[in-house]
Amino acid sequence: MVPSGKALVSGMLAAASSCVAKLCLKSDSWIPTTVGKLCREIYYFQNDSLNTSLTLVACDKLAILSQVMSMVLVIFLNGLMMSKFLDGLEESGSISATALSTAANFSFSVSV
Image 1 (tube, rainbow, N blue to C red):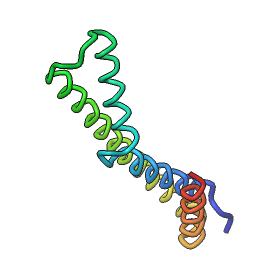
Image 2 (cartoon, one colour):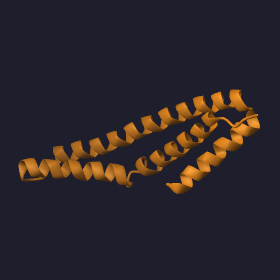
Image 3 (cartoon, rainbow, N blue to C red):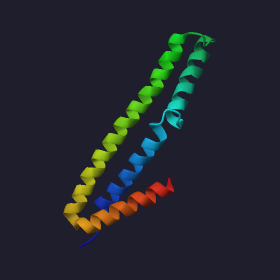
Image 4 (cartoon, helix red, strand yellow):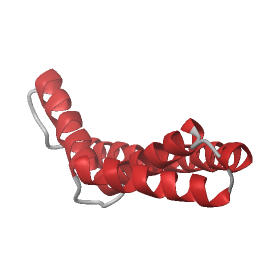
C-alpha cells in the first residue's frame, strides 16, 4: 500500500494543535500575557492613566477570552486531524497511516 498524504497532514495538524495548546492555554504563557499587556498599553495611551479597576478587569477578561479562543482552535484542529487520519486509514491501511501520522507529529513537534 502507498503511504497516504492525508496521514501526513493528520500528523501536522496534531503537532499544530499541541503547539497552540502549549502556547496559549497556560495562564502565564506568552499569548494571554501579551494580550493583557497590549490591552493595558492601549488603554493607557488613550487615557493617560491606568487607575480604573474596570479597565484592569476588562483587560484580564480579554486575556481569558484569548485562552478560550485558543481552546476552540485546539478542538477544531483536533477534529480536523481525526478526519484526515480516518481518511488516511481508508486510503493506506491502519499500520501505514498510523506510522506516518505519528512520525509527522513527532517531526513537526520537535521542529517547533
